[in-house]
Length: 141
Image 1: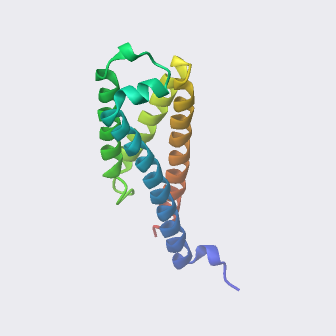
Image 2: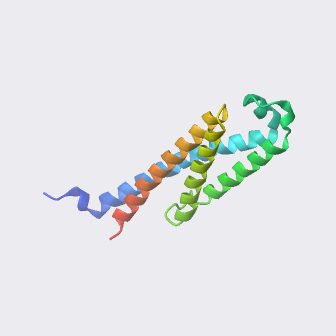
């Protein structure tokens, strides 16, 4: 009787499954963030009203936030295809999401809900990436 965990085929399948799970979760998060970024660019006053901000906040800051959000999405999208070779991009994306989430939580109000969502996304993505990275390292001879 052989130990199945020591077989290379089992570890290759585990790494492939972990990669697919990470890419799926990252794709879902990036899709939500891209939709929010486009909403901030297309209807900044609508999003400002949804957050409970006054109409005199203008449209510059929401559009700037939408542009930055789309840049973050593009930044992380480059590492989605081959996450093993884009370790630094992925880790920088997790850290950026966590810092942004903490900043929004510190602002309190309705921003705290968005901050909690961003912090949760950073934690979930980091967890799935760690599982993928661990499976990839265990797959190496």
